[in-house]
Image 1 (cartoon, rainbow, N blue to C red):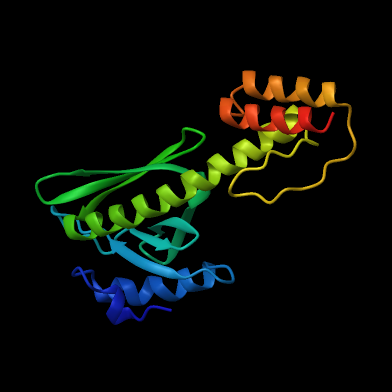
Image 2 (cartoon, rainbow, N blue to C red):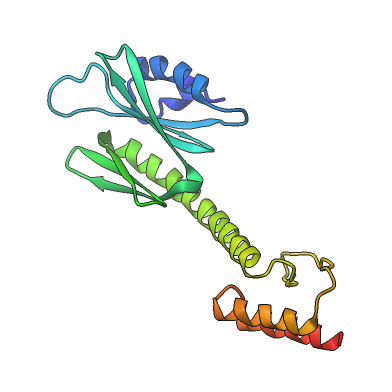
Length: 199
């Protein structure tokens, strides 16, 4: 767990971090770790209750104080559902925008540039990891829908024994998977060769 001293590395308001950190910690699930907290800093006027963005290893959390800072409104997005985090720098600060895989967007303005850049770097790493995880899930879902019982031996999977099935039926399912883009031509050819060798 990060200490307040570790979190205040880009001139965040220490008092805001001290107030927000325990509430974010209470909000975290088991095995969830806070990685960073960015604190809004308005360039015009005084902001007694600035908004914050907390980054954890599981999600991005937008924290907006309500009723003069007496309560906090939390809105969180799991990294698996975040399609893109965009940063637009202005003269004094940046706007951070989150876009989900369902097309929903949310943003927060007046994040100091150094904090926004750090937040952006972390988000890009998480997006990259989760994009690959989503791709694997989608592929597994498509394979299950297309015929289930066929196992394609790829370097990342161990051979499994499938329930005895008619070879022609297997080939038909493989062809459907190839036509739908679930299998590559190479995977199709390998599986076809394997089935034909057992006939």
